[in-house]
Image 1 (cartoon, rainbow, N blue to C red):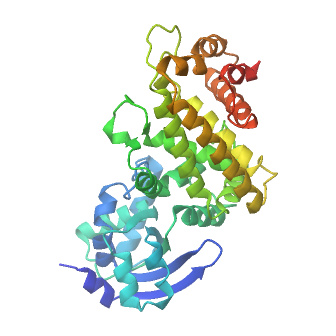
Image 2: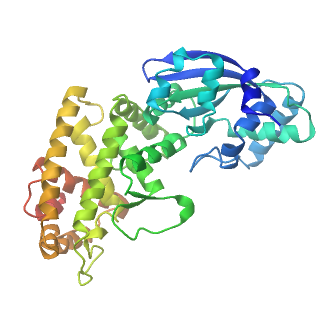
Image 3: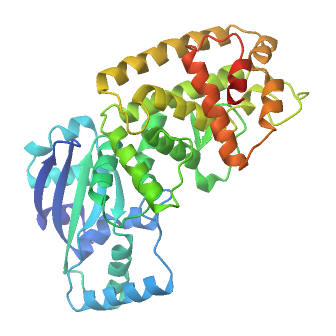
Length: 397
């Protein structure tokens, strides 16, 4: 049976620090058996990632993989497989002082998050080729991207893939975002993330579907309420906007805090419960049950703090504007917490919201996102000091 010690003894490692993204690239040479043992668990979970691209089953993909298998049996060497590793800040700070065995111990630490970023098809081919041919001692190169923050991996992945033909942007974000969800839960333990496989419905405030949170992360980075990733040109511009956002080392932390404020407002207004209202919004928790409302909230903050795409503020200005958002949002939250349910009802003015949002123009999906974006932009412009949300709901007129 292959063990981590066996892997350590037979591995060569070449390490380079990416000082821009604050992560390390470690090129490792493993035997096929050693590599498959290392990724056994994450491979069975589609790379260890929710949303990860599974083994392709199209006719062309099957033929290509079969050729790969035949080549492997003849001793072919595959292009390096890329694995992502999220470790602690403490461990990351010691990477360049570790010897090879110690470095691989970090990589194999079960507490760290490891995922197959690029190589599901190659890993499948290795598994299948090993079934009837002894390729266990064949060599395979693996590149580890080791970082303490997910945005470091995202930044590096997007920059390296620009100009190539990679997965689409959403797929790339999904690939490494599971570690973000863990960080978000660690920062706000009472936020409930509903995973895709759970097939659950949001029933309470501070509950959000994982795939929806991923989209919020995407629009927060792109600073656009509508992100059309089906169009190649639109995707390329979105990718550039996202790269500009993740260049800020505090990017993910700001996003987590934005989610924290969204969840705090969600909980505060949920004290209002009334099923007599006519329309989609009947009680407090209905507001952020609307994904369009969540997108409007997140995107409006992103634009205010970071600037519009193509007109990015410097980091000092971003931090100043973010601190202003936090102060103003905190004051409104404290005000809401002191309100009685009937006062919250008056503040929310769902009657006006239901009337105005029912006048859908064009595609309902796009209309609602733009509607809430304008509403929350006005709330921000008024320093969160509005008496009621009525003027915000009318901002689209």
